[in-house]
Image 1 (cartoon, rainbow, N blue to C red):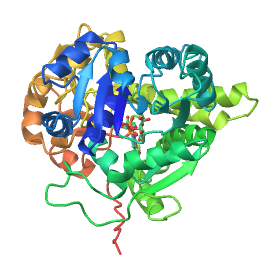
Image 2: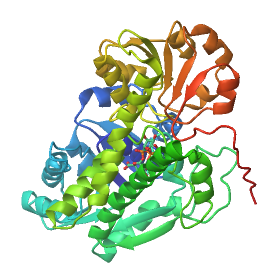
Image 3: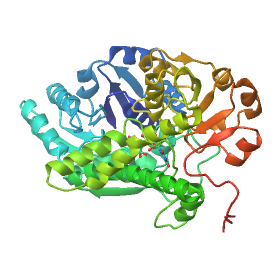
Length: 461
Ligand code: UGA
């Protein structure tokens, strides 16, 4: 099928490249000229493991191209995916101006009937508005030829390629059979596993094929916000548990591990620490809460989730102050700046917020990250950046581990201890073993794992 993808950010690039790998002809467009130039020069504007391989194959097969000209991308397409950003407004509502703008461009550029698919995360009822804009601005020959669908993405940054090819579910919100048929066709290669898997070189593991869920447009829109909000809620719950464990002498990892063995609860998204960040969970929770508020539904639960999450930063700062006594002019090494491992994304990253707090208290920060330094540099003036963890630790009075990159778990911590002026580690992601760190001579603090002597043995079935 001929597909257009509008927006070449994290979602649009992954969606466009993977749909081309699945055999479709994809033209992707973005109004950021630099981004398109970068892509046309064969480089990637984002760090996403495996994306380069998918992109190279799709381009070599002549199934993927990039243009700044939206009309060029949309003109011949049978279906158009809208993947533009929906950033938060000051009110917390999602800013839908880019969607509105793109809808007008699609309407103006279309010469044949099309399926227009919302992939960006949008509040419920956006589909209706989208259809209205398309029809109002496309008054010409095909003004009423637009069909609208919602197909929310559940891609996680860092594992987006695997998530695209091996989803748990594909949700399509439609209002007519034709759209459902078209979306089933678009995703047929994924449902039937007919693609070259960039994640599993020696063949994908057997497993259930993804569920293909057909819903109303409003339900599909709600499913996305409801899923992200619930994930945030789970994390906030684990974080409050960690606080309780600190007061009562429990170990939050032992508690959440046992909880997670109950299939009704599940083990994921129960890692306590510095809280959630990124461009999705925080803004989606805010927008979902605003949506509920505007429709007279009390979703205070989400407000609390937000409040608990924001407080994590201050709770870490309290640990820093307690350990250092005076923060001013102390040298602090920061390991990890991305909002989570395996991405260079620093948008709404808790680590960035922590560095700003340290700067506000006049600490001398030397930070490092395996891939996010370039992006962090742009938002953190006055921070000294170090090439690696050892250089960051040199002469430091404290080291804060803020993003749990796998490489940080296996550092030569003995060497780090030697490099530091004072071997003090505050592990805001519970990534290291308290017992080992103490045995290496570190003063060590983390979230919710205070009692190191009583280790319950958890035997897996
Ligand atoms: C999230 C959702 O997981 C995806 O399903 C969704 O498609 C995506 O948003 C989106 O809306 O586009 P992502 O933002 O990539 O994906 O990040 P997550 O993996 O969800 O992590 C979010 C934050 O939660 C990170 O800061 C992470 O460090 C934190 N987190 C995660 C915890 O603090 N504890 C946990 O147990 C898990």
